[in-house]
Image (cartoon, rainbow, N blue to C red; front, side, top):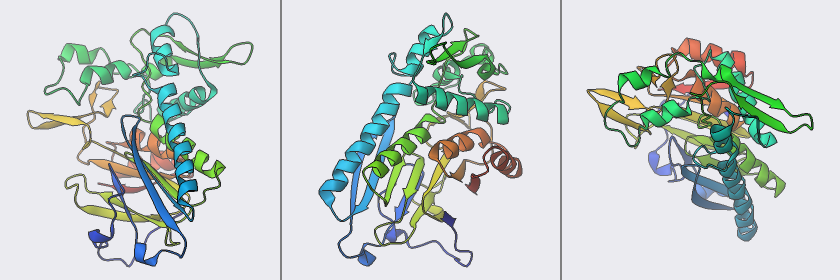
Length: 333
């Protein structure tokens, strides 16, 4: 459930916002209103190329720490299984071998790939999980200038996702096959959201009913905050990271933001970011800098934000609602 206050004329005092919130979000909390006996236990840890933050509202701090351990283990499992940087992961093995023969992958990887292909079809390739080689070419966190145009053109308008097959062997084992040597899988636009969902599932298995999992720009608000109200999430400005431009109140709901302000370099007066346009093989051009999507699962919110970034607001909303009935765009900035 997501709530907004239509009568609110100004954003909350930023002093009420905890530091909990690396990346696109910060989380409002009012400890003075905390219910008796309930504590907010927080932890941060590096995982999936960013910082994971988990907060659990519970009366037993030691038990909450055990639940957080389980949630972090779930995130690390997804990282080990679906990272393109790990040669032995499902994705790493597929990228090395699937052009020559079918490669067996885990069922979760097959499920995430299938969902990625659904968003690729819905967005006519704007979301393409098979552009890992183009992403590596741009390498926006290391570059200071664009790669040669001739190298970029190799990946322009290829729709490489159409050359990925997700199937099964006779014994039921999931397999992937590549039909183009230029393709390689990069699940950066969806696997982090799936990891958040797995982490939330781990918390639920521990009986945790109120918690928050935030992995960079992918967040799930489970139940309510430590004061008994829905979690209040502040969305940071893409221009000024110390300013909050929008707030939403969330309960049992995911939020994910895609934008051009976290991973980029500037050259010749233009910002080159990590969200590529499959038509050009280059970073997408947009007058806007971020889009925030809410959905029942973080995997859906993550994929939706990646798929629609750079589209005009009306077209972005149409694509999101047509592809996932539970999803909605809550902010474009």
